[in-house]
Image 1 (cartoon, rainbow, N blue to C red):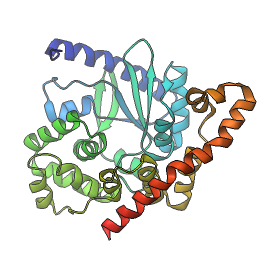
Image 2: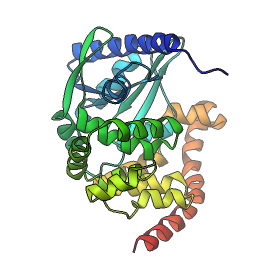
Image 3: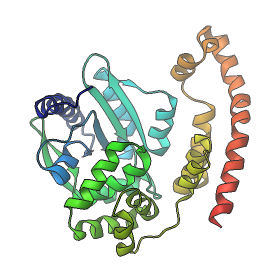
Image 4: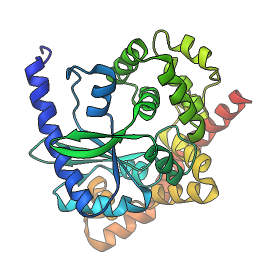
Length: 308
């Protein structure tokens, strides 16, 4: 398949911008504060020529309005992703929403990957680092230079894809050292320094920059779990306890054990056999999760030993 032309990239970006404008207008009318990250924000800071394609809209919402924002997306015809995204959205990172039939794809962020402070603190810090940007004819608060620069490094770690690595490499080429100093300062306030360092070390020249910034070399526990090919529950629970303490960890564990009925019905035929089938599916879930938890606990113990 041939690479898209500049005209095709522009056309698709404009379609996505139209969806962004529609959602932002609805959020503004409902008085739901939101901040745009990635997409046009990255294109403005790092590319500047409109050649960076994007495929969805990433919005960070204030934690207190996360559920109303989800409800509003549903009213606009968007459908939520499966349970894993649901868990991330409520307690971890983000949740994906899509609207059949158009380019409506929304990643609704609850916090930022790699940040080890509560979501409320993440919002407060990012809200102080925004810059206005016009998307689809609507003005919205977007990630400012420091927040965008930091997120490029964090996203490179999270996504494990080529595109975020290209974005980060281009940022290393184009952005002044002062940008990275400001990003490191924001990372310090969000307790995301280890993840910023890990992201920089994924691309050429990043290790040198990380050393110049005085960033640590030790990999975060979550990345050690990934290297050990640990089940995803191990990383999720580890992050939840780190950022939310006992209460946050228990909340995530509860959501994993008792997901929403829509997820149960979509994933397990038994749950679609009426109320009794749904009840039996819920009763069996702890047994299924226990069988998967043992390797997670073993991997978590190995990772902690490796960091000692």
